[in-house]
Length: 126
Image (cartoon, rainbow, N blue to C red; front, side):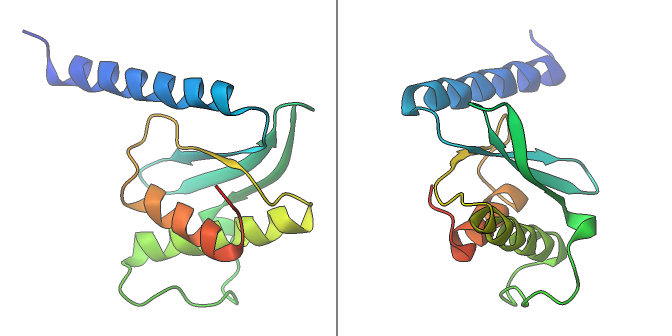
């Protein structure tokens, strides 16, 4: 019998492989990558053609003067939503309008989904 930790790791690896395979099929658009820790969420827009990071933001660095998120979101979700909006605005300033959302091994749920919704609301298309 497989332990829960090994099962979760194998499942996460398969999920990550599926996401990266889809990226290879879609083509070379900049990708919006997400990393989630217990305390923070990091997001960046990477251009793989030029091998350069165009925009990178972390939730602790976004300003307090941004527009408020919808009230039904909890604190972590609000922060992720605002991070997505700020990332979209910074990406559009750099000339990026279409991206591939690379969620990596994370399920499209919770803070990851809130970040994606914020990025879409900010003007990014994916």
